View (tube, helix red, strand yellow):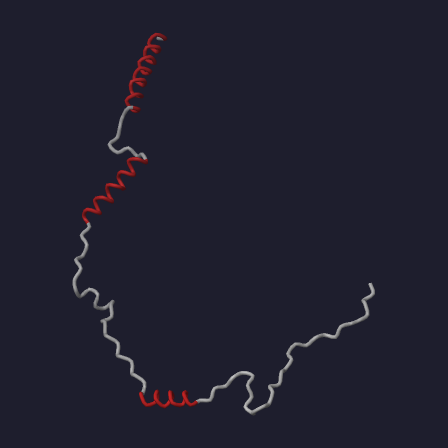
Length: 126
């Protein structure tokens, strides 16, 4: 009986050993790796990019977004008579010189804007 149990255990070990490599060597269609996921995203992106059809641009599409160009009005010119009278008053205006007096022979008064502080003759004691 001991021999039969050893044979039975040996046969089960052989079966288990045969089944183990079969489980490990089995491959799936989609391998969940980072490289394959990048390829899936890239394939999806390229497929959507190829399927994209932009809407055609029509002539009236910009009507609500752009203002119509209108030439601005020309500026009104100033009155020519006012310019002539202002020019005449400018030419007849008396010239004012700084420091000149209106009275003949009067000397201009000089104002001294610089104020000097009084000097102390006594030396400061330290």
